[in-house]
Image (cartoon, rainbow, N blue to C red; front, side, top):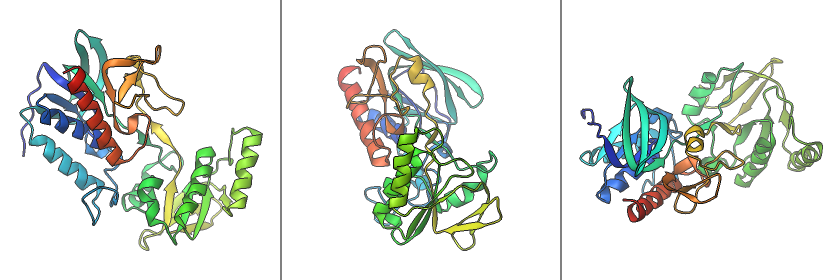
Length: 331
């Protein structure tokens, strides 16, 4: 068992978030002979932690689970413990600009701590909005953990040919996702609004266009409230509706968007947030100031939290770009 890292007063880079992007940023800093602190709430907070199989990770022809990939990355970070402090479970509480960098207050093992970095990398990710039954999201976890409910079209769409899909959601994003899933040639796609009116709040003209698109593509809509799930033994995703009926699918697909996008810290530092809730950066992952549109010196955002694509190889690429830029300009 590795021992607890020693917290330094200051590092070259402080990285807030320990998912795939944050972990790789720490390794890259070490490779460039800089020190880094990674503040990680814990692997279970990574979006991929519960993914049983991922086929889009280079070098793993037989796929790898999200949990296993995180374990490998954490082990890689620990190889560089002379330069990288990996603090978990740790949660950032406040960040402020100081002379020559940033100061971060965080909770680590129940105690409030503080450290500084010449550069600050935000890698806090986003949190999926989970399907709920009467406000309870935990009921779907078992199906999601077994890969019977998917969340990413780009990560999992290749698995859907010939399958029946139940898409969870009621808004514009859900309708567009249901239509997009047809590209992967499933046997059928059905939209489940879980008691919410279809396209509730969408302007009438836009709603009519979307309803026509659903009809054109032969996608039916079930508006009943969901009261339970079934089919686990048969490795299916069965949805039990309030009227006593059951809808049965090979897979469920959550098209509910994000529950948390971790905007508080970038906003506090003057960062710009786009219309979808992502932190706006330039191509080097420098956070742009809301007031001026210019890069904020020394502040970066990588991975799912920034505007761009939400896949793990992309997260690694953003970590590379941010740390190399910081190496060249601030460190």
